[in-house]
Length: 266
Image (cartoon, rainbow, N blue to C red; front, side):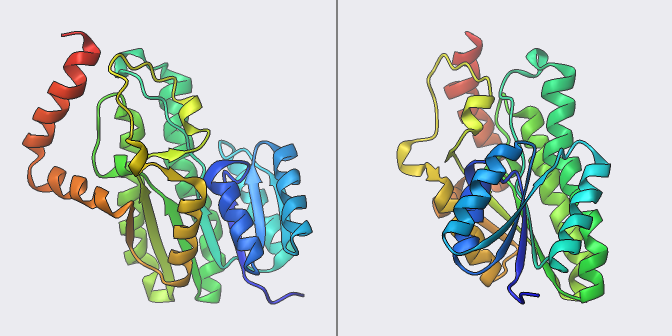
């Protein structure tokens, strides 16, 4: 059996997940690709293998606990280990709270963005504890530090991921298991096409601050090689997190006048 390390990536069919899979495959990792779109996973698997890497596609619906457990079982049967878990799957619906559909916009966001992260980690944790090794990397968001209008549920899930990661790190560090969370700002992926956002003001992340999926993948690689608790990218967004912590009243005032009132038509 190959001794190459193994990374398991959820939400691997596109965007950050796919970019990370390609990068880790090129750098000698065996890559487990998990998502619902099996055809895309198989295309990515083929691309990784044609580049000299090794990959395994597993059709997985993270809404189904049985499928999460089956994913872990299949991975361990095939590769015998998981060195890195990247909890990457997630989506957002950016509308006013009263406009969100209770099921597909609220419950589903909480399920995919938060509950699936917890359940995926829990399913794999006994294996990492037994090995006394492993690294859990969660894909957060700046919404986990600065919660803005129309991101109510999305921000709630990313604040939840942040709290989960902090508590988990303090639980499992005694076994040598690392826990990291990456908090990107705006990323140019399919995410934007699923938000259903309708902006009167046209406000969006400035192009100078927008990241590519490959930028984030490079950060995942960096964190896997040098584990850190928290990484905010791009670095300038640390100022936003700092401002929200020390002067939330100022953020409230700025956001209300530049976004909420114009968008609400007030």
